[in-house]
Length: 108
Image (cartoon, rainbow, N blue to C red; front, side, top):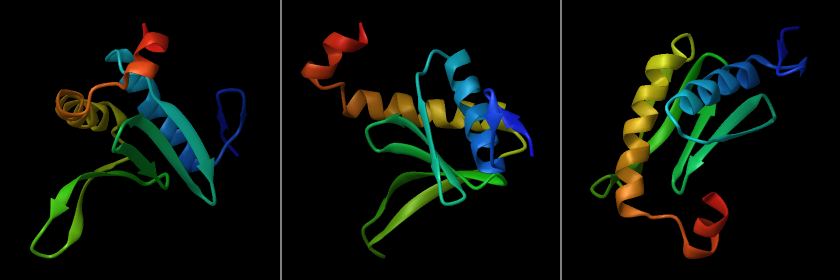
């Protein structure tokens, strides 16, 4: 089994950590969490990227007519480009959902 950040890891965790690394290169902090064969990359309020090791997917909006969430997805074989797309979503959300005051003091 492959090793990710010093421990044995599922493909989902490896993909999530690759995305995390690419986001860090763009100055975006993110946390990786895993379980049940999936990994999550927590980026910002309303921006969580899921991975099953084959692809990444994240919420991009809401379709009011169909009353359903809209998702974007990207192959996990290309974490660099996926990180660019996630970074664009991150910038959009940062403009509409600033960091809470209580957390802003810790982030600086």
